[in-house]
Image 1 (cartoon, rainbow, N blue to C red):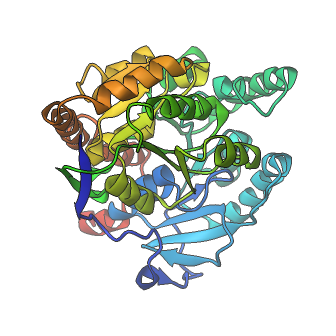
Image 2 (image 1 turned 30 degrees about the vertical axis):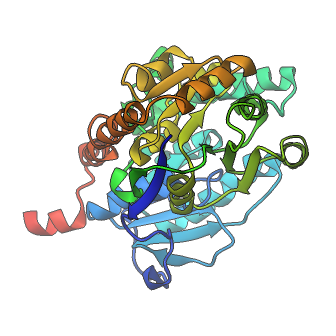
Length: 410
């Protein structure tokens, strides 16, 4: 049996340490204005990876995002808050226009937008400002719409058709399109849109460094949205069954959950589940490093998951956790083929239980080898350090030279 002990942390654990907060300079014109109406201000890909990389490259970056905080400069990035709205219809129909109004006032040298509902806004910014506009597609939005569980079937089809139409009409008219994996690039290529792939790999230096020690109680760690389509019920059912041979087994759930599912977890699975709710990414990683012995990503086989690259798998690798994942071919290529874990049928609790018991019963040396392979891959093949230069190169190819380089060249 393996367990984990944090022995070193990377950079400061808070996305907004008090020492790094300043009042924004109203006279400072940003080089790059990043916009999201869906994600929070400290989203890992948007704030901690892309905004941070652009800042470090010498660009002045502002971020427009939903937040209850006042405008501030946080870690060198200017946060401009949008009102936080809870209703999806308001978010999709009203927030983009609020964001556009704020973005126009920034008079930035370039704009970088996320979220499908911002595609029309991207075109408007391109037409009105005549500046480079980058759209970050993240994933195959059309396929994602077809898998939304909270929409009725006919609404899903209508929403997917609307997204596809927006992609066809809008994306050819922006300066560049980014996607996070090969599947997204293939989807966009089918629409005649060229894209740059910037994988959502992990910056391993920001995560806890762990060492393997003996004696920790078995614990399955999960981080991300706690939802039905991500196989949470099947996972907890399998874990309950596995407690017959591993009676101290617990499942650590870190992430937001719908109220009805959370209530079900706290009643039906109270013995095995420990629901922590959403945590800031550094805190979530620390908790996993201290408690988990296996990292779990057992999404159900919905089409938008089959060809995605789950960020949590790369996080588990960087932490040094053996991995239990869904038996999707792409995921098996990431986890099983690399020797970092095993795969199971996520729709079959019996098979999942066998997989859990299989991992928990393996010799410590074998699990330690899985963990070490994951750590090494997170530093090499699956490292954000290798992806960051692509983002900088994209901006440079659009004529966006950092201010400090302009000074040197002058």
